[in-house]
Length: 123
Ligand SMILES: [Zn+2]
Image (cartoon, rainbow, N blue to C red):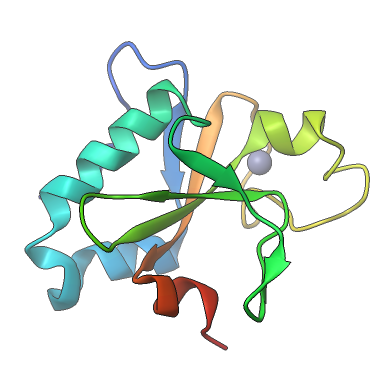
């Protein structure tokens, strides 16, 4: 299964860090790809739905980013460029939302994927 490079009729376009692409393709998540893609599509329609704006906690600074559960115990971490600008994270220089990709208010940037422990307590 491939990661969608666009989602029909959704207001936001998904882009992915290499880390996210590698995790998605890994053996660990192969059986969960369909659920992950479904969550990605839903995020591209309404990024704030069933999602929290994150803070600095559990040892990782995800300020300005969001999480959302895929079905089950998998969490996706993403940046919503428009919100990152509108809520002042850009002005404060906090956590570049695009992981180095070009800024675009129509995009959602998928950064990390894993269990709660994997996305919040690594490093
Ligand atoms: Zn951005």
